[in-house]
Image (tube, rainbow, N blue to C red):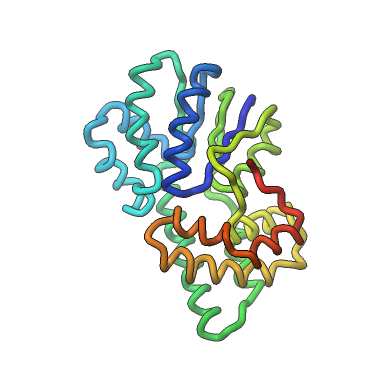
Length: 236
């Protein structure tokens, strides 16, 4: 694999990814995207209904995040017929993701009500085995959504280069996932969970978009200090 492209899971970042993809398509003949495989096939063959089709695979909030990329897929396919575009997620991925999201929300409510966190309970959720195996074959460019998957894909696939659509920092949920996978030591887990409660319970819940929630996290001075303590590299 030549390049892993990391993208924050926000509306603004996916729009920037779309602009970046056109440049990558001029240099590489194959790109893999973090979308359900059947959705991508339908998006190309029924471009006028792509966002309605997406609702079969994602909820409305997820469609809003990925809409700019979904709308661009038919244009890429038409303009660059020799470009091999694949989508590597199973069709039920976002259904599973939504289930995990409900469980995280329940843990956030519990933490707020009792003013304490159960580290074991949180980590059991993030240690759940993946329900899919990413097989990207000989794809030359892999787009990875979120910090955790970007770092893991870059290392596990031995990519030659790492690019980002926009400045990429981990959310507290990324940090918990990296801890579960052994990329981070566990001694700071409780502090990370406390920021996860703030991120989900305040920033995500009270923001109009994931872009706004992400920006609030980036501006959180205490969280930036935690990233420095953990020696987390900001990807730019």
